[in-house]
Figure 1 (tube, one colour):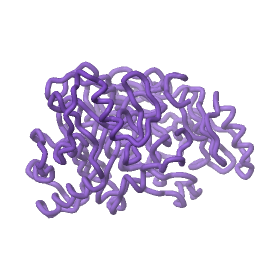
Figure 2: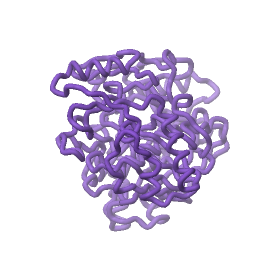
Figure 3: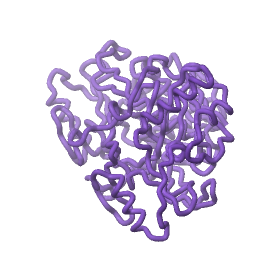
Figure 4: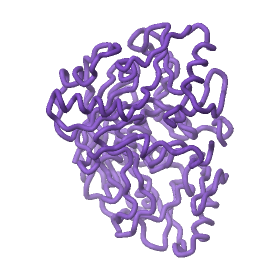
Length: 231
Length: 231
């Protein structure tokens, strides 16, 4: 079965209080089983997760980053690598100044799984289709250069699919195969979004129907403090 | 522009000396600009990168892992987190016992960028099309549970696309936007492969033509020792 990744063009600038689900269903005909990927930036804006900062004074931005963090892991120049209250480890606690009015910083949603559920429920109510939703953000990686989009919240789709205990093509039991399909879906969506072209939504059509269950980034992806080997 | 991810079904068991390009072009009609993703396992098998191990004696496997590593970063139970000679940081130096005859372990290709170029050249010679090739493998991540497929070698397609200095939708210069498209392409391909269903090849059709330049995982993605914040 092939998979199709469809950019949703024409989403307007999102303002606090806007309903993203309405903007999406007005622009794309969704089908049951589609997974709708929405970038964090528009989700945070719709939820009013913005604070005023003096962008010419890095210390005011840094104060916001510290406020959004439970732990500073590393610091290099202007970059703070922190753990957010959600348990995400990312640059500057996900606080972002790009694609926003000068003088404002966009924070991560308080509960991105809940944000995803709200969009999923809105799409269900407006279009009568059962879709998965992934809220995505752009994170760096410890050992690899370049950023990729990953899932920070999901609804109606698994975050991690556990294939442990199933058999490989030779009938040998697979040792460790917990696949983070939500991150792969987020990354696939990013391929049609482009950072500068302002396409904040994409539809991934054709994922394995077995993945379409209630999921949670917080419960399935976030590695509890102390469980990783590097903090 | 939509993106399509097409699994290539019916690839037979690959043996040392087999030409993967021939198996691919016999089963899918490729177009200029397609990116062909091939999992490391079949690439390594074609290249004869297998060693005999006593799978009932973990110490023989561990000896192979150490041989393939330049550095042991962490150890937890049976898992060694190591840096390979390529500079990849991954579990057990990428040495894998699944989807292989009992008594054998599969090692990573010696030079996965070269492996990708060989497949790309073979496809060009046999089918007369200019494609990108990504050799993918399944790696864990420091801060997130679940594995994702990433690129360990590329040819004819960028590994990292540098969007720094371009403008965002509001005309504000993007601060840091080096996107690792090769990893996102590898992950997208994994979504149609399935770990247990033995589909080792997928075609990603519709990527931005600007990405179709000569690329290199070694030069673009591998973070030199000491540049990361955690080793």
